[in-house]
Image (cartoon, rainbow, N blue to C red):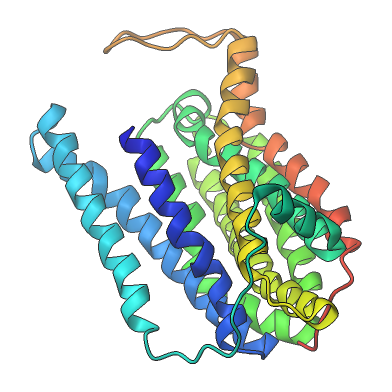
Length: 324
């Protein structure tokens, strides 16, 4: 019940949060700038939570008390971010008001009729699936492939950290060649880096970290460009229909994104179960089968690469490209 309430609160915040760039500016370039800062802040928040939450657990003595303290830490972090977004945009101009279709069936029907949105959403969900698989595979890859469970923290930081640094570069590229081309480039970078991770083995941690940084660079673009393109879809739909329906599109978008990120870990878990992966209990050391080890390796490398590559033909068919 607590998780359901938290997820509901996330949806209530995320839908207007994603819709807002389409309401406060009509300039596609300004939307890209807004989204680039958002994604960089998101990466910083993920790093703070990913590195800070385990530290809070340890400082609080571990066990139930430690995780309760961690819950409080994350709750405060979420509250500061969400309320900060509200307060920080309280004086922003609202150029247009959105229209809601009301019923779920009507909302889905409207979203499905807009071809650029269908293509962009389908590509983004497939990418989210690949990213979800990769994030879920971090601890398995560190333990089973690299032979160093502690390397998981480094892998996580190498994946998320570049998003903060390279965001201005992706923004500049998008303005020069267009958002669609930038997204295709980001997907290619991600796929190449992810495929290279199939070379991972004990003693190759440095090589793997370098490849994960490449993946992280592509990941930054995969996060920024779709969210910058979504307001363009909203604006084009308004021009065609005469109605501002940002909430319709962002509502469907948020639900589909959450589904993709949720199915990713489930997909990896199902593949590991089929391969005979056995979970450890306590400090017991469990010897995995060769099939399980191979599944962990491919689940962190070739599978995410294949999923992201599968999204690129959809992006290539996307034809809504405003002036960069």
